[in-house]
Amino acid sequence: FGSRHHAQTSQSRATSYAPCVGVAMVKGAVKKGAEKAKKSILKFTVDCKQPSEDNIIETKDFEQFLMRRIKVDGKPGNLGEKITINREKAKIHVTAESPFSKRYLKYLGKKYLKAQQLRDFLRIVAPNKTSYQMRYFNINDDKDEEE
Image (cartoon, rainbow, N blue to C red; front, side, top):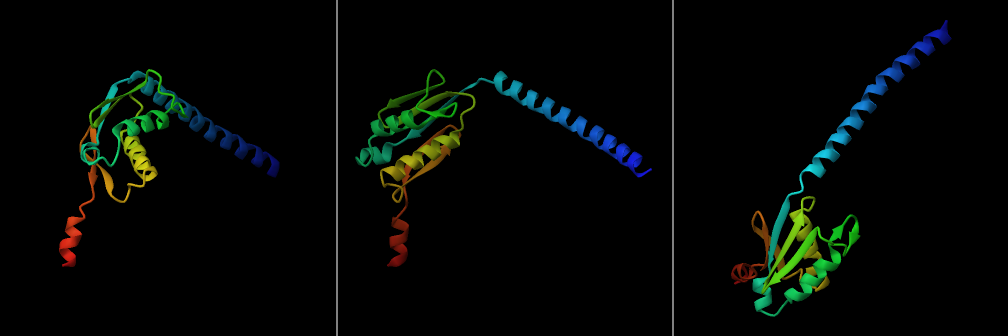
């Protein structure tokens, strides 16, 4: 009597798990299809005007840093045709296909500043949706408070 009851519960468990697995597979398939469908081109700008005018950083070096460090398909420096990096005086323009985040640019910018030991003096700020700007920390405010 007990073994028959056990057989019924194992069957009901098996049926309760089966639909969940099927639903998860369908959701995964839908997401992959949606990612492939939207291949929009994103354009971002990093403005290094202030520090480059003061000869603190070389935009050419920062451009090379981005070319070496940006990862495509998990491999750094593998830009291919998906990502292009251009430099105009003190501005660096990054043009990329859809799965590329602006936040990743900020992360790499901060990493560059850290490598150059400038992280204590410069920060990366977003003045609008498609660009970042390297700015100095406002140290003047602190001096006024001390006096």
